[in-house]
Length: 175
Image 1 (cartoon, helix red, strand yellow):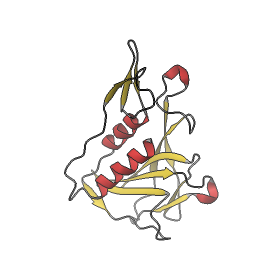
Image 2 (cartoon, rainbow, N blue to C red):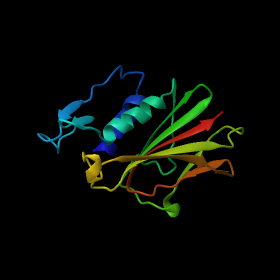
Image 3 (cartoon, rainbow, N blue to C red):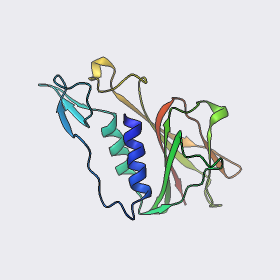
Image 4 (cartoon, rainbow, N blue to C red):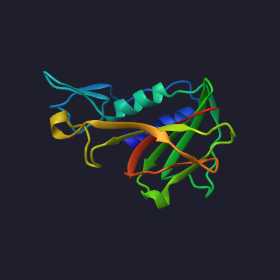
């Protein structure tokens, strides 16, 4: 569900010239009453759970650009990896959502940045502990994982390797 939310947000971002706003279906729900339904935040009488969709919205809001750029896929297909590219304050921001694609080095997404000064980048990966981990309280293994690390460049290209079949990635390249 979280990857579907992220793909929806990518569509809003890519079409920001005509999409003026969007609304999320449910923001807050009680965990014990509706544990298997979608909401960005769930709660019990003494705990608050921010689910993966919350963290996707937070990651995308933190990495919001002011100008949208086209993204070209060499094979001409849209999925299972969806993308959006923007710039903000001399940084190119590429958002990728892997919706059940093949993983590993042989299936890496190769990103070409058309800027000869682009020699470094960072990648932020957001993922759940397992594919079945949804809407769980921390003691049940439902916590999101976020990892930020440098991304190395080779021949004017950066490679993003998906290690999980469902993953949300943000690549930042200073211009």
